[in-house]
Structure formats: C-alpha cells, structure tokens
Length: 74
Image 1: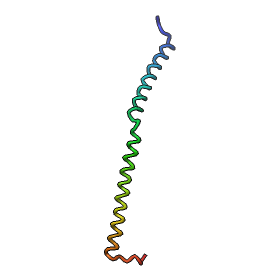
Image 2: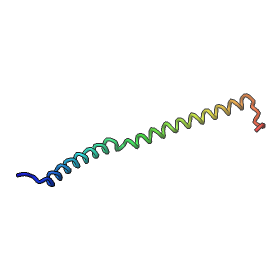
Image 3: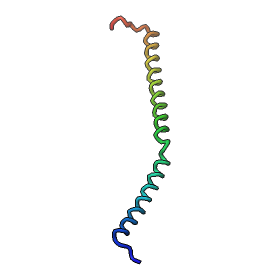
Image 4: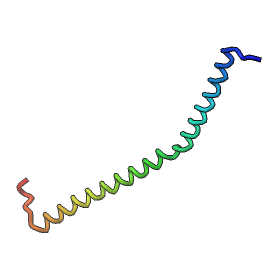
C-alpha cells in the first residue's frame, strides 16, 4: 500500500520533531545547573576582587598615615 504525499510529509515532520524534542531535552538536561554554577563562581571571583581592592586602599591609607602625609592640603 502506497502512502500519499501528505501522509508521508506528516510522518517525516513527526520524526524530525521527535529528534528536535530529544535534542532539546538533552540540551536542557546538560545545562540545567550551568547558570547556577556560573553565577556562583562569578560572584566568588568578584568578591575576591573587591576584597583585594579594599586591601590595597587600606594599605595605601596606612602607608600615608605612617609616613606622616599631610592631609590638611585637601
């Protein structure tokens, strides 16, 4: 029995849609927690960077105070 062109087209589209849905499911499953891990690492790196900048500022202030810098000129 021969299929009509319409039925054959529908069968091909359904097959492709199943493959597309499988690829979508695999993609979402693989990268489900990726954004959460990325955000955690980003904020951890950002907080260490801010801590380093704060340490530099405190060091510069202590250095200026210990060398007798005259702050009254400002």
